[in-house]
Length: 216
Image (cartoon, rainbow, N blue to C red; front, side, top):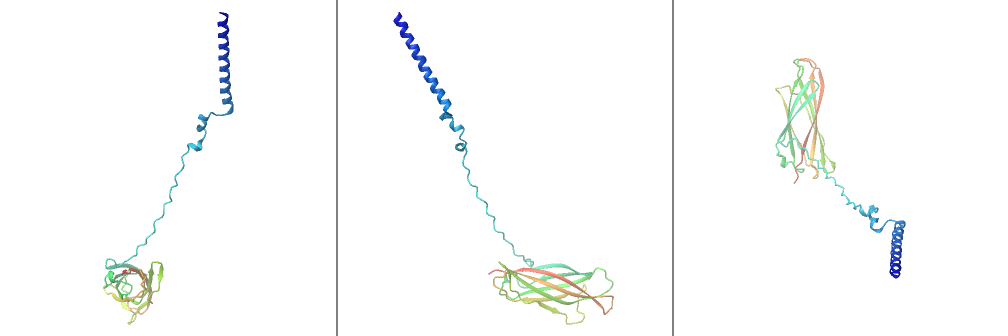
């Protein structure tokens, strides 16, 4: 019986020693740092997904449309020269698809006017000047010289409604790169200072007309 008790005591002592060693190992691991299986919870770089670059959108090219005021065949403009209201109708006898750079291009117009405060005075168109400006894809191009109609009668052409003035100017060949032409009109008008008077006041009206050049 004494031998059994000594054997049991030795086994109990051995179990205590093994438990002490296991506890020491665990304590040693705790003192050295984070356990390997817990390291990923502190490694934020490993958990952060990489960002995909977002392409920068490219702006679409701006396309400037070519203005053509005679696209419907004619254009009507209302102008003012002092107290005189003018109505000008522009048109061309050449169809717009034939308005190429190399063609001779007719521009026709008719004008009539009314006085705002009419005391019976007459008024006359003494001079009209047309100055062309030609545009291409990259800017201004050489233009034809100005065209002028100086009244051949004094004091000028009578344009008080219902009378009117009509004229046609020919636009010659342009630079082949031309895409449009702008015509600047200057109308010089003489207005009687009083009914039947030979004294006149000069009034001026300006206008512009833009026409597209047909491309081959």
